[in-house]
Length: 97
Image (cartoon, one colour):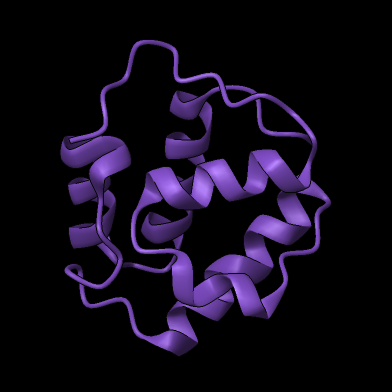
C-alpha cells in the first residue's frame, strides 16, 4: 500500500507506537504531527529499525539502511517513503512544526 497523505502516515505511526505500548510517542505524534522528532522522543536505533520494518511491510517498500541516519522527523520519514514508492507527498494541510 503506497502512502497517500501525511495524515494517513501519521495515523499509521500513532497506531504503531500505541501497539508497542509507547503511548508517550503516540501522543507526541498526535500533537507535533510531522515535526515529531524520533531522537527527542528517545527512539533508539533498535526501536527505529522495528518501525522501519513495520513501514516496509505496510507500504511494501524497501528502505535502505544507508538512508536511516538522515531521518530525524516524521516529515523526513514520510518524504523518504513517498520517494521510494514513487509518489508525490501529499501534506493535506498539515504544517511541519
